[in-house]
Image (cartoon, rainbow, N blue to C red; front, side):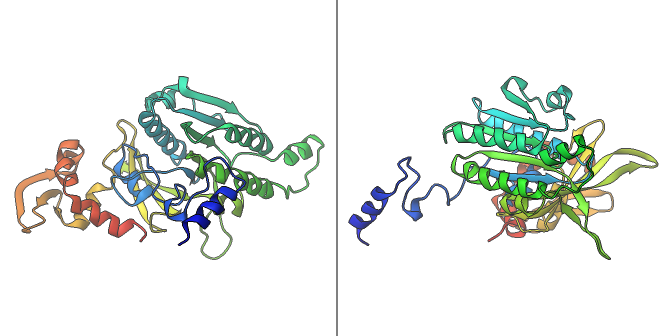
Length: 338
């Protein structure tokens, strides 16, 4: 390889901001820095690993109303702020359904959040593009939009003001324009963004959940979750919900993977959601009736002590299992791409 020619090609580039490099050394294409949350199963849904997390780029969390979508975004926000003590948040708010109490539940410092109310899609686009243009790669910023699914286009608003009921054919184009413009900034400036969205049922004999807003958002997103839920009931009383993260799109996790997250009214998010099934699949736990027993993975020996499932919801129980690197290796083989 001619080093002189390589240097010449790099020098001749019109870009003088340090973005041009040899492909094998490009900071934009190799392993990205990840931000783990305090919920191991969420880390698996992001990265296919208990020890991974989300990266820069667009994460879209979609689903019907009351499906914990905003809370998932707040968990991501909290993880970012904990990892980056000087980092700030841009919070674009179109639904105004996230009161101070939600931030308090997740112990989020709201003095580090820039709150930007928006009333239509064009306002979101103009302000976000302006903000991202001014940021530098060393600026630690997390972006959240709650929600893109609830945003009208400017034309839709103007038609309503005129008393026109004409269908708005511009909204999907505006979404595609927005994400086409911001996606390079998110990657090149190492900015994570989460967008909360809605879903609708497709037409046909077997309806499926479809992310609203057209293909523009779908193509731009690095990760798309479609969240489902089931009631957690004791008798006739609802104790909470079992949410299921359906990985619709991911650059790291096998698509169509399903990751459970449990939330109860009295205890909130179960940090240890989904781990029992993963441990049973690995073979380090054995279920016998209503009891669980640990298994020595090397010898296959079943240990005498038995646990009720509720007794496993603590760090002490899982620390020994997590300390086995082969457990995470098993999870990576099951969920991770490549």
